[in-house]
Image 1: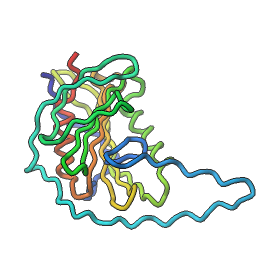
Image 2: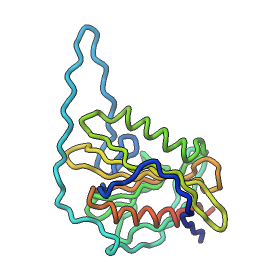
Image 3: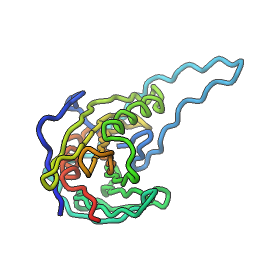
Length: 230
């Protein structure tokens, strides 16, 4: 089994300030639909006043903690646009693997409450680098999320991961927003499984603000273990 370890020398472009909390406008999350951009006003009509920024309703769901997490290996096949890809990853024990015919290139692991999730997608054929993928999502989010959803980019990082003695690129984006009533916490990660080549795997790890520490552990385990098996 291939393993990966984070290498020092991470380039941080932002900091996660102790706060925490997945659902992305263009990166789907459990139970929340992507937000569309605002429609243009009709000719001759004045645009409506912007809606006020939402005040998030606190969730009473207990925080996901590192201590309660254990992991197990999963191997699965997904259908990318050009081929079938077999991937392996270590995901939290007790989180259910789900698939959808509408998204054949990805699987999701959902916790029993369906408040947290891990989405794993094979990118084939590869196109953008991990850094370019991160930068594109930032632009897409800022364009698609209306101001009232209070999008906040917390952290951006371009790192390297060592797998089987070789370095491969890794980029991470962390943000929060309010799609409905509760603020959500989202980590999106892109991995180039073949060195510095384009990103081949995209992962999204999502939950609530109080889950930051636990979701960080899920991210660490995922980036150490995700690999293509064939």
